[in-house]
Amino acid sequence: MKNDIHPDYHEITVTMTDGSTFKTRSTWGKEGDTMKLDIDPKTHPAWTGVHRLLDSGGQLAKFNNRFKGLGLKT
Image (cartoon, rainbow, N blue to C red):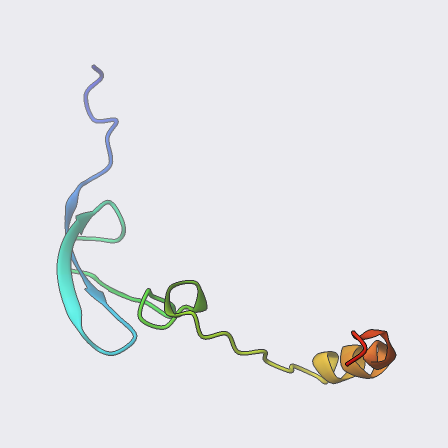
């Protein structure tokens, strides 16, 4: 194996969205850095099963108005 080709593997702190933290080893950042997560298994819909539709700039409203007549007949 070649010398000095592997990244530095060190301990960092990970902060979850709810403020809880844990220590892990990673090649990210430098020794002692803190990685703050914006999305994690406690908040992401893929893990929680709760899906929210965000309407940014009226995009969702435009879509709903354009296709309101194409729904299933009830």
